[in-house]
Image (cartoon, rainbow, N blue to C red):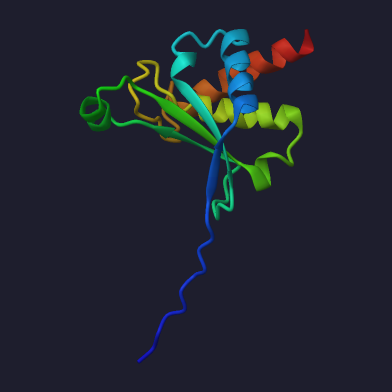
Amino acid sequence: MYRRKQKTVGKVDWVRAPDIHHRVLTLVERLELTWIEPEKIYAVRSTGSSARAYARIWGMSRVWQIAAGLPALYCIEVVAQYFDKLSHKEQDKVLLHELAHIPKNFSGALLAHTHSKGGFHDKLHEMLASYNRIKKD
């Protein structure tokens, strides 16, 4: 019988990332991202992840909100082995990319990478343009 070799799965550790949280709050405030409720955004740094992404955003689905009696919440996870090697500016761009996944109704859902008019990419381009204007000042 052929036996498939199993991947060795390492342990992923998550720790709160107050530095990332502060940077997210600063971006939200400076770019006037009014639909984002900063007190409902959390940030963690992961180590040992096999993810290939620099960062990910996690939303709390409506069913969990109801079951736990909680409001919509979001958590931005930065993958330390990739994110921490980026320049400050590139890190900000990654954080803005994750924030662009949050819909205008702040429901706990996430916007997909769609190319529709007014969708994720249009929103991200607007945010990056605002960021670049602020950085020039």
